[in-house]
Image: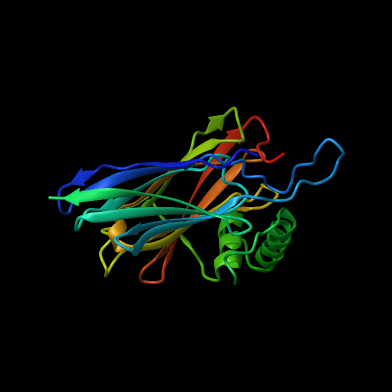
Length: 108
Length: 150
């Protein structure tokens, strides 16, 4: 399986109090554990099971994902601009790997 | 009840059977709502169907592997009054829990978009846990043409 690649689209600036949209995507097979390989053997589950967004370290939004989330999980969600700083995004995979990315936000 | 547990379709069928028996024992009062019974079983409280929780999915969609889902809860998202979590359940999937979205007042809006897998045509259910402890519910019928869970 290819290494997951994660990316986020969020504004780099926002007005204080403004509610802005964030789009987050990670390429991932989301192997459900229900499929069988060519030999008929069940392929083990391996999915992204959690996503989180932190704003200057504070958790503002998170998701528990299960097998019925589509492959290459795509999330659109919102945040309220309060102070300048950093948005950090993390995707947790079955088995413990964590994929992260971050983006600066300037609040005027 | 541990929200993190995967819940299988067999467990759903047992809930449905239970709901059917319970309803048969009461005087007839209208069509049984199996989705409410299922949500009661999963979340331990009775959800109230509400127009404040909008679940938008295409009524017909060719590809069960990646069905668009959007939801929005009419809420001020203040400390005093906000949405804590919205759970998505697909009762006819082999594993019925889809996702749980956890909001905070700093989310600004309890609105998300994503894509999910559906195994067959069904009512997809959304249950919103509010900061005052109440549960709201909405459902929408999606007719998928290809099993996205195989």
